[in-house]
Image (cartoon, rainbow, N blue to C red):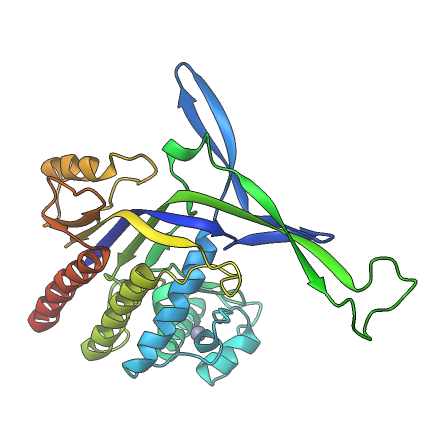
Length: 346
Ligand SMILES: [Zn+2]
């Protein structure tokens, strides 16, 4: 298996990437509570955030594209960025092209396990996104597949918590001077609205575990056994790596990008650990995360190589690059080489 763990700090200036509700004409940015220690007391800040669901959505859109390029099946919903994930019998039918198994109320034991095995198999075969990103078939029997990648909230880093703010920006749609303005209806002809924007250095985290891609994870007796052949697993793993490369280099995360594209979108630092087993990077919420990764690796390693880029340079890591793109490409080449060796030996 190949395990990738990404942590980084990214500048996002004047962004409105994850809006949560509108109150009248006021559109609010997502905000989360963050608690930190100051001396002997603790204080909570409410800060702008981009949800892990938003990051996961972006990754899976890219993943669907990369899977299709390599000839892997992707269902018609996932390929359009609608991640229903075989949740009901109706969706299952469209994803797999077959009827879901019908279990009577007296079904038990072997019969339930047989149905669950069949459901897991056919969904994994039918849609590469649902294989890698997980699914929940919420009918009888329930069949669940945990995602092979993990991400979370993108929040301002610890050092900026005291200075970060969200500011509502006034915008207007203007129609005065046209025949579309109706008189006697208050402010018709000029509609104002507010959008909250924020600027900060944000922390970012993403882990990818290739161990069970294309394999059973729900049916206990078959746990870890392949559902598809090794060439198909190979295509799926390669697509998952290529999608991660695009996610990190282009960072097309979030909504409102046509009018609120961040004025600056730039990685201040990033570190990508490539390992032969589960090895996660320390959180980039605090600035010394790359040094902590080096310290962690000196005590515990899974043949881990830490690839990093930081403005002002990074020291102590296995590979220090002078640009973000070199760090991303270098780490993914490392992952691909390890994966190719595993495919050859299988
Ligand atoms: Zn799908």
